[in-house]
Length: 444
Length: 161
Image (cartoon, rainbow over the protein chains, first blue to last red):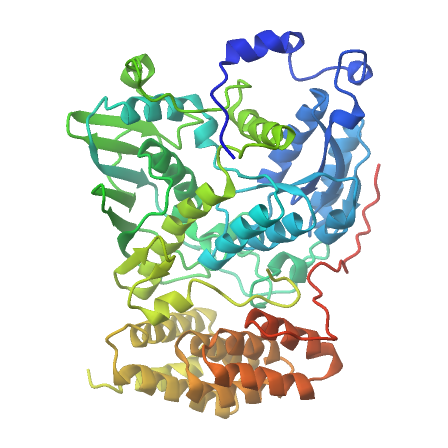
């Protein structure tokens, strides 16, 4: 399969003229009118995980419904309060969506074409594999996985079942990243030798609390899913899971999954990459969270040689909380955040592609990058002959960077990654940690 | 450091894992994991065996369930054939058996597969599918015990609008 040729926003809106200038809210009465997409043309969605990011994705699912592209048929969460809130939200939009506490009921439904997975990171791999094996297309939040083995299984399941799996690293669907990629890939700053990321620190659990029984609305067993069992703790659940290595993996596996995705795009480095990785950091000395507040990770690539640096807090070069600077032979170029939410440098925006130069593909369909990214997935499902722009294989390679950064920190030693064999060279212990056994029955 | 220093540290730190002061327990856990990760490095030599031996002796003593679980996961990272028997013995401990199963699943070699096969024969009915899962993960066929991963079980009390 090949990726789309870039479709200019103006051209797209010209052919889809009814949408031009129209806000996303379209009265439901005209959705199946003559010349409008009818119910049979829609992709029927199930939303798995509807708090936090999942609630945002539900909003997008409902917007695409208003645009005639989707139906929202099912909702799932391990937290009954969150599930009830999502049911109400759908009801307010005139949608009757069936609630479930167990995502596998959604996978059993033949009328559901695709699922949007926005559960905690430790569920991404298992649920994506199960969904593909059940014949569903998948939009899954980043990072794509918490272990290398999960990522490999996700790629295999997507390919074996011919499903479209888009991963929610939206940078490649944002114009700032597009401008930056276009400038770098066409040599504006010469060959790039170093990319330096800065990011604010992981937080410390400054108010630790003892383990307790879970709140009545939460199915703690389901929330933990594949992870080894542990008692519930208020500091280890919604949102805060990010600060534990086994689940969230800290900033490098959260924002790093965004930033690294954009960087690999700009560096034309989506293929199998071999590199060394060496991480240092200071473990917290208090509280439940174990991600290092400060962290420095250096990745060294060969053929071509370049270095990627992840630093918390690092050398802040821009105006915002995190970003990266590309250092080339002929200058540097800064990109804030992941290249979607903030802005690109004016030189990159103004850069003209030389004749015969490289034109990156970005799904230029909607003004909002989140809609763009999900819209790209829906288009790939409809087209069925091309992969979405952050296909699972691309995201898996990005996640490997995040996972191995943390692994090098945890092990306190430099690792040599063989990107073709997908193994660490000469380190049996480290290779064993590329996979993690999962609790029954929540496994790949 | 002598070769057995990491092993001695494991032995000394282990009782603190169940300390009433949760911060002491967490500090002990961090320190023990540090020893395990040091012992796993490629040039660790005898240190790995000393740490594994210290962990096995913890499994063979009387410990709170939380200590057993932590030790099982430590052994899953650096244990080899010598760890299989002591881990397999934990399959009869109802609070630690799932962690023991996962530890066996992770330890390379024929010994761990054989231990899982033996466990399947004697496992109680409510644990047999768990063991079968590990055997499948290790490439074994387990006829008669179908995979449960896609079978939904959880019910919600939330009603559709």
